[in-house]
Amino acid sequence: MNKTRLMIVLGLLLAAFLAACGGEPQVVTETVEIPVEVTRVVTEEVQVEVEVTRIVEVEGEASTVTEQVAVTFAEGGDTLATVQGRDSLKCGGNASLGGFGFLDPETNEFSGFDVDFCAAIAAAVFGDATKFELTPTTGTSRFPTLQSGEVDVLIRNTTWTLSRDTSLGFDFGPVTFFDGQGMMVRADSGITTLEDMAGSTICVQAGTTTEKNLADVFRALDVEFTPAVFPDNPSTTEAYKSGQCDGITTDKSGLVSIRINQLDVPEDHVILDVTMSKEPLGPLTRHGDNNWNDIVSWVTYCTFQAEESGVTSANVDEMLGSDDPTIQNLLGITGDLGQSMGISNDFCYQVIKQVGNYGEIYDRNLGPDTPFNLPRGLNEQYYNGGLIYSMPFR
Image (cartoon, rainbow, N blue to C red; front, side):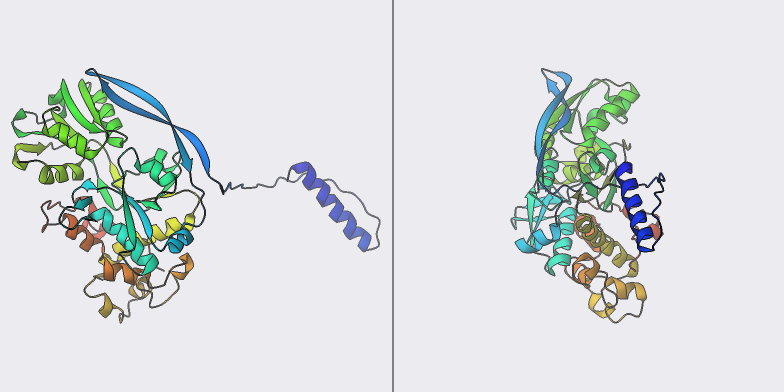
């Protein structure tokens, strides 16, 4: 309603009131500033052109290519109702990054740190951690796959950045893994610093923050290099293995996975003692459905808080008798925290019973009893000097 229409309505109402009281109506004109917040809700599919800039290698020369890619954005809608109606969660993930998301050739099933969070959401929504389907995505395909509604949530070692959180139409959940970009080279190369890589060719995956960070960091160091850009993790790693590149760059956790799982002699390769960027990794949902993002977020916080409170998959049934108010709320013994999101109040109990707390998920996939033996570092609980911190369950 604009200001002119607002003044007319106020005037008519005042006149009617005075007439009803038997007095002579007097028209009083007053300008009133009323702040109005307008929220636009998209309730239909919208196709837009998204501009994608990539660095590619053409005949040995690095060049920048900008492409227009058509993406159909799914409506905001009620994702929870869609998931429940389908009786299955669709989760976008990785199929080739050991420890985080990969297809186990022995079981022909997906497993890994990120995959466990897909299972945790299924446990919270259905009370059954097996009710999810994982759609493998690449660094380039992952965002259109989520934007189009092909998957309900993306949990695939994806960095939280401003542009992804805003212009791409996403909402991030809590960070599940704090990482940083690194560089791996051959042990006999003599390379110990990034400056030593002048004139080198570096393998990097397309459509990632890694690709842009690489260019930015080396430009700031005034070090010339040649990027060799590949569409996904397997092709990037294979190029490095075959000697096409002097180094390979991605998140440090990814380099650890590549070194242990995909290189014939891990000891022949070293990860440089340098962190090129901040890479906070976490789940994404589409804009337009706050409740669904709440569910994804509080399932994640559930795993954080359970570890903090000492609740594990082994003792969760015993903990149902706890008189600790936080644990009572966490497990749905008291309160209606789940109901407020449209799921069962014992959603966190189901997550912990079937999948485990954050520490269990970490140790099962990345801990000392795995080939990676990846120190938790920043991914320790806050009281142990890390950044893992749950919002309060109350």
